[in-house]
Length: 199
Image (cartoon, rainbow, N blue to C red; front, side):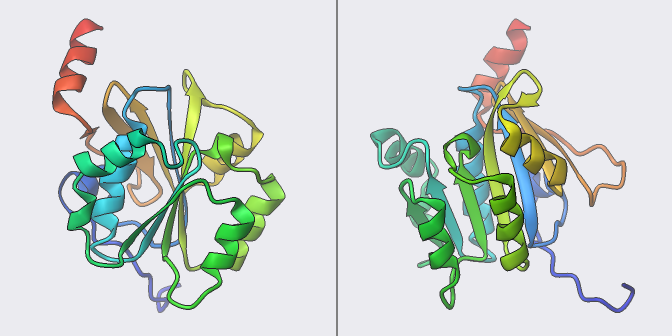
């Protein structure tokens, strides 16, 4: 272990404060109720990650609706390095796996969301085993502080980075933090102020 080289993602700014410098493999898990800023956060995170690797964003839930186009425009995704970001509109997992088997495929994959991802827990394990050098980020619906569905619960248990969105603020913990409490990440300041000032 001492001599093993570990490839980390040198996140910057508020992402580094939230997540640290994680390995670029395994799984991350984000959950929260509807309208709490999850997809916006994921798009902002995707933009940060394109500085280092190619990113596939599989919009399983919103697919090619206008809301996804608005989300990309709001976060100025055209500023990403050429060829570093690809939006896939509702690709079935079988097709996405074939894409990942190609040379120069994306190193990082975002699935939005787990509840629209037609795969079993065995499929999930096989995905991580086959693509052990890739990072998979899963977005999930939640009921309170619990993810919805058996697959989401399994992924959350396994995840190296666990994130929770509420009121346009993301909190998290990571295996890299070693007990250190990370800073919160504000997705949208005005929305966060309105939400948390009412509580």
